[in-house]
Length: 287
Image (cartoon, rainbow, N blue to C red; front, side):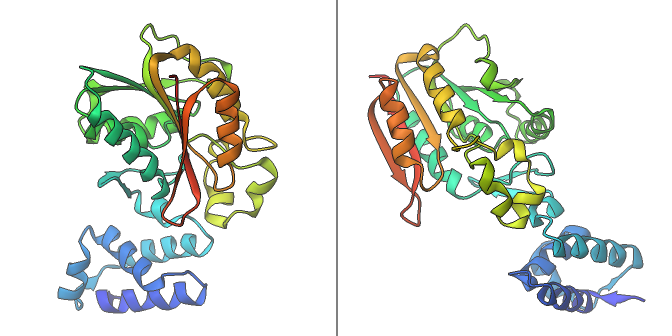
């Protein structure tokens, strides 16, 4: 049975609302825009457009997946981060707004730096959100980006090509807990948004995260601090004399990560807050 755009939106809204999706109208609109390859304004200027059966069937399939908690970003294959559009999908975490605090801090720090070239290592590539944002906004940066997941590297490479940043980024497929990559140059900045959820807490997260986002990118071990302990220890060997180590953290991990940095002789350690006033970023310096 044929539907107009208006009827399809109403159908999606009612279905998603009945199944307790938080923003049913917006998500119905986003899915229709995705399937028709139009912007939201088009939905209101062409409400009587007839939608063919193939699109209707796909719409029903996607709203059914959304009902089960499948992330809307995976459905749309897109998430905005730092003003850039990132392709996302199964195998990578969806970039979060909180991570922009970490990324913006590094960009502002880099813009004050007088070095001709900044070497940066990002540990935990994911979709490439941090890596590619730094490469895009910092003119003289070269980013070494490390991830254990081949799926993550594949998606990040796709984003690198889309953003035309091939000459500024090198992706390295490696388990960082088995040692840092063998790179001759030292790093001016090491940044990481590592897995930091304690293993026992993952199943209690919202279903979009616990069921569908990659556990490998979430699980920080028994106390959530495994990666901070290892990376902090090894980072001193890889940073320049005035190098900086920057982490995103869980809201209750600020003092723990600060202590880890203290134990490894980092100086001038700062804890930055997110927009909700919770600890979100820890920064330490070699000197």
